Every structure is written in C-alpha cells, then in structure tokens.
Image (cartoon, rainbow, N blue to C red):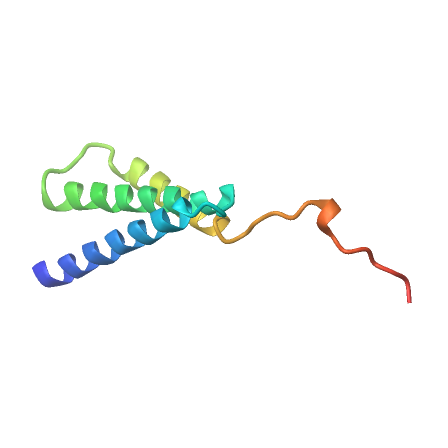
Length: 95
C-alpha cells in the first residue's frame, strides 16, 4: 500500500499547491481563496482518516472527518462559482 498511498498523498499535495498558487495571484478574487480553504479541509479530513485507521483509533473521529470533508467540498465548489451583482447584468431589451 505504500506506493498507492504515496501517489495519493502526492496528488493531495499538488491540489494544495495549485490552489495556493491560484489564491496568491494578485488579480484573484476573494472567491478563489475558497479553493485553498477547501484543499486544506480536504487534506485535514484525509489526515484524520489515516491517523484513525492506520495509526491509533481516535475516539469520535467520524464527526470531524465528515464535517471537514463536507466543508472541503463546499469551499471547492464555491471557488468556481463567483457571484454576479445585479448591476453587472446586461440590460434586457424587449424584442
């Protein structure tokens, strides 16, 4: 399992690196920071799973695991959806 786990860990690290690179760009909106927050929550959730299952069981670990996983999914999703203001909407002209 060392090779697959090492590859998976590498993928998670690349996800965090790329989301941090996106957030660090000067023209990046606040919503793009959510990708980094989501990546961090995701890594934290997976770390809890690894520690709980393969190191020492952590009492009550299921709740923080699932909460951080869902938070990660929420923030990653929000990072690709930037809200538009009503003032930015093009005027609709009747035909």
